[in-house]
Image 1 (cartoon, rainbow over the protein chains, first blue to last red):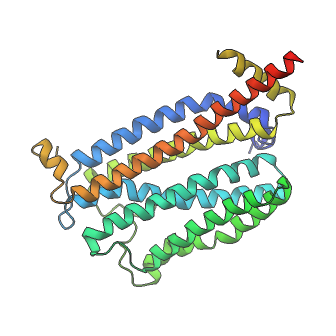
Image 2 (cartoon, chains in turn yellow, green):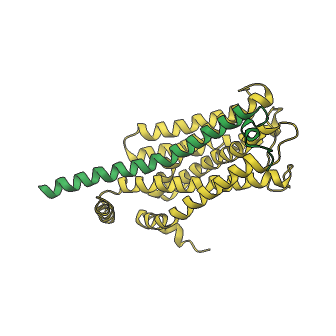
Length: 251
Length: 58
């Protein structure tokens, strides 16, 4: 396997250039897919025979819940990369992905509550999966707070990396909570090994939404990381050139 | 199309409040996440432009 791309990731300048080229495509794909998925899911997918139309919240709930968990795994991977290879970019990614993860967890919990009211008759129950998701939200808050509380950049990076790695134990708990314990929450819609239990007209828009949300994550994360790189590398000569070009480009 | 009319689409079979609340807040969260880095970048570039002008005047 060719590892040059991994070593290049150590260079913020290379990352800034390549991400600038990807950003319009990712952003465009996110807009198209999210619009397509929402309209498809809201207006064209058939309604559920038990839950009626409230099930359409799934097209928002499942993608945000998937994102909330995969962003946390990303934080842990970035934490390992940062601790082992001392890659500066890993800390930038970790710090910038954490707020997006917190927003997605919040959205998954909120859409879940709004969905739970007509389906279970309650906004919130202390169900295993719901509780584990709430813990995930607090883990995100912890990482964000820790990153802001320590003024030394290297110490903050190490502390956040350790917290991200330790907290990743919560992810399998969320994933298997519906199997280990008796819960109200329904089991997973998508499994890698089996066909979905719902008909294709129902899960196709969901798949579009999941991919759309991943593109959204990529675009927003790149935007945040690019800004953070400009701030952190402000003394590098390529950043000064870039800033001058950006500043003089607009009146 | 799984709805006969637009008003049926809005009503969502008595679940309209839940569905549209979810999607409304969802749209808001997505827009906030897009706006924050865009506004942050603009403010940073404005600050840098001011700093560069100050340095040139010296």
